[in-house]
Length: 218
Image (cartoon, rainbow, N blue to C red; front, side, top):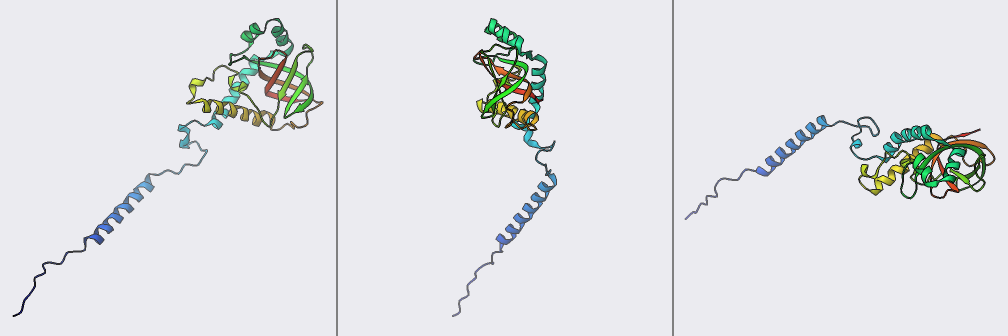
């Protein structure tokens, strides 16, 4: 007696067909993405990173504004020294911008450069009291936020956090170095006559540390 087994229809290989379909769809999607993608050169006008805060860009934009403001409001040094000697608080309110523990005041002066240390030089300036020491910082490190605070228009509330606020100050300092100090041999200023327009924070009325916005060597 012979027995026959009916195994039924053989299943079709669906996996390979499904894989091929998926690959085809992926190729079509990649092609569409490529057509819709624009190549943007870093630093170009189309650079989409402009959506976020860039300290470097902020410094480049703001330093010319700060410099113009300081130059327009700069007080001649002997006039300023006399006003501070008479009434420190009144002088700060009249000539400066509030900035924490002391106002930031714009000034201008000329003098002979003395000894320097760490890029900070004393300057012998005529017409000021003998007990007044005027120093100017020339880098390589430019410290402080005096340039950022000089106009009174840059406020903490404009930034996301304290880090951005500090980075903004550093970026303005860096831009000043590039535009004002990069062509000056700041390591060899002793004995030379310089003219300076800049700012300082009035804390000690007998010791001013000036950050320049313009410095010329005569």
